[in-house]
Length: 187
Image (tube, rainbow, N blue to C red; front, side, top):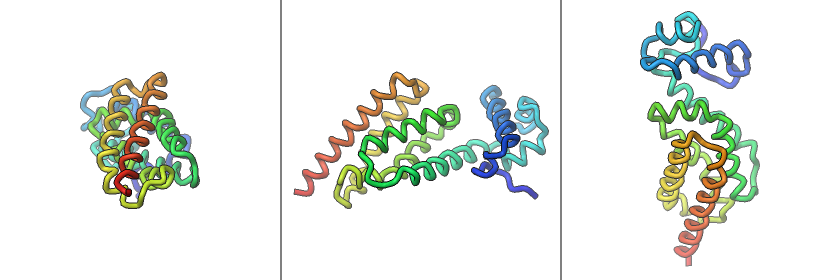
């Protein structure tokens, strides 16, 4: 039996991606995607094909959330070390724009945790790039909340490109503010 779910290997297969695109389109266009029959019919596939892709229709959202976060983690690993702080946030925002449809889908289905997952994965690099003290991770909870608010607000504009620079500038301002607060605590 073939294991269901999204993996990088499966997403490299052109037929799998084409079917997955049809499934996503179906979910975007039907109100009640809890019925496998409705989703499969709208996607133009059989129910068994749908189940080869996803364990059940309720898992589609969590499958995509896990997939995006794994893809993001792999992307972060490729960025290397000793980059400027702005680089990490620019790349995070570019990743969001590149995966806009799926991230909007997750947000519309109440999965705002996608941003928290992305920021959490980025925190270690941010602490090093901003030269923050090691104990900063505990103080970064407030910072994380502020950045989450900015990203969620940007998501309401459906990640418009013209808002991209503004969001980046606001994140950098927050980062500089938290850095000065944390470094002030160290003295």
